[in-house]
Image (tube, rainbow, N blue to C red):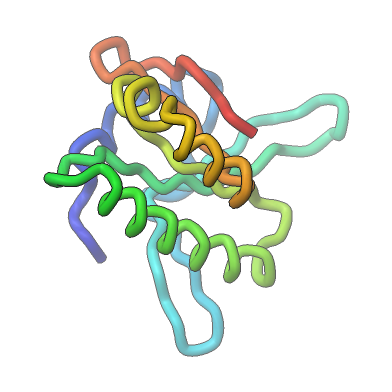
Length: 138
């Protein structure tokens, strides 16, 4: 397993504050001979369906020298996880969690918005200081 991302605990706390129950930290994704770990799994009761909404979260701080390089890696990882989840747990939605600052500065770029839309990337932004979720993109 990889080390925790710099903003992992803030994202986890923000999910809990938002009413989510953390069900795995990390979340194991296993298909055939491949074993991977996403950062978190969470669920929240949903009365209208008499069930739970279930999500898997991959946390990224974009702390490297190049946000584009970080995005390339995150997108590859996201698509790998999404592919396996579609087979083993298709009811789960996969989200990328980023800081509010990265969301506003990097994910606000027109070129990045294009890729988010084309790739159907689900993400949310967290205010790291307040440990709250400030934006969901589905």
